[in-house]
Amino acid sequence: MSDSNQRITEYDINPIFIQRWSPRAFTGEAIDESLLFSLFEAARWAPSANNSQPWRFIYAKRDSAHWHALLGLTNENNQRWAAKAGAIVALISKTSHIRNGETEPSPLRNHSLDAGAAWTSLALQALYAGLATHAIGSFDREKAREVLSIPEGFHIEILIAIGKQAERDSLPADLQAREQPTPRQSLSQFVAEGSFSFRE
Image (cartoon, rainbow, N blue to C red; front, side, top):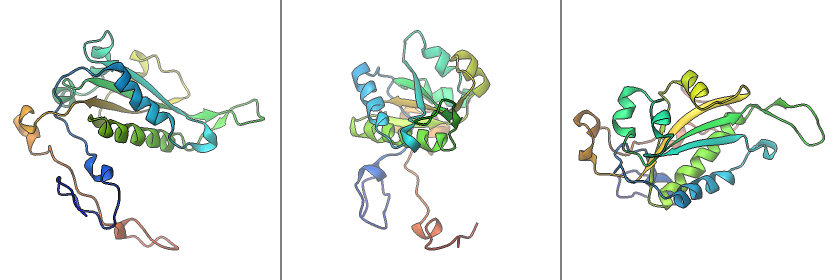
């Protein structure tokens, strides 16, 4: 199975999974708040250990009072394209959880995994809504904790740029060649029956 972006699957799946990728070209258009919150609504229904729902989202829409604070967390290279996003979102996760019947919190070993599930749900809903998303891992986490008033007990995961996708040629020349969907490893490289048998 293939789609217009030339990604090819080994088994039949819903096309949304290969249509989702991480462009850097955004139009600079604002995002309506109800549309943005529909992405958070999708994230709300992600699975989590013990239904702990450890994800937290802190957002800024472009041209809002908080926009420059979130954009300013990214490095200079990422700011070149993220500045045209319609919103920037910080994803953080709570690292402990009070289980039913207990009074003291216990470590939540799967907090990052669960936050990742919420991020995937958000990204797929964004695609369904006609938006693009791009996760940003290169940013100042210490500054983020201070600027966003994130307390101890929360892990800073990623920033997410969200917006309407623009044409590739709107990017700086050095980024245009990277502006395309990426391939994936074959299933045989990461799926095994019974025991670990991968070449690392």
